[in-house]
Length: 269
Image (cartoon, rainbow, N blue to C red; front, side):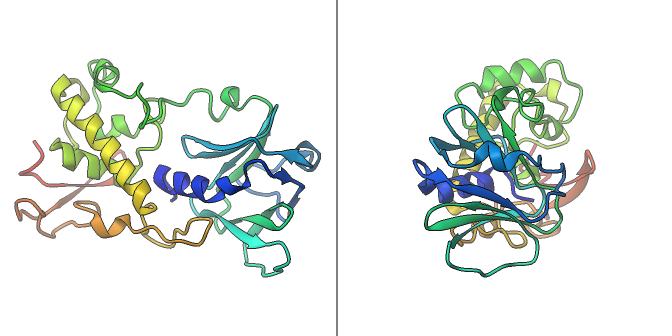
């Protein structure tokens, strides 16, 4: 599933369409996670794109007075293609048509979605989301105040999208390892010093993953065709029974909140 770094990488790949006119949108299959509104053709036709940004894992194509929201779901990808190129892949569901190029939304499992909104900040899918992990608002005091009241594992807390967005399973495991915190620890028992270490670790891991282009576990490619390479540097995720890169103790695998969790029982206390 594309996570925040993959989505950010995709946003950066399509930013070149800022200040371009989106001539039209062509919907080949409206049956995604939520059916695409039939009026979307008129809503976006010939609109000038002012900015392309991201909120959580939503790609936002912002016009003067509205936005196109794209979520990649579990298997979605965007692909940039020359307007004269008629190459078509199975599961190409939507095309955003520009003067010389088009952006194609491909989604094998169809868990992605596309929405038009005149106020994306108050859209039902976005308005209750937590803070951005790379923002100043995501700091030790913010997370410590939440930790004090929570009787859940610290890994489940940092993966709660109402607390902080975009810390997916891979990045949660890697950040907790870097911060030397056991993922099973109860949130209310995490000190403010540990919160500081965790915040720093999450920001560092996410920035590094974005720089590397995301995490290629299966077949993630950015919209410009480049692969992600962060998976080459994973310290714990997917390395169960392999030696810890710090102390050589075998990495353990458990399940927390129905998600596979990887950690070193010696390095993480």
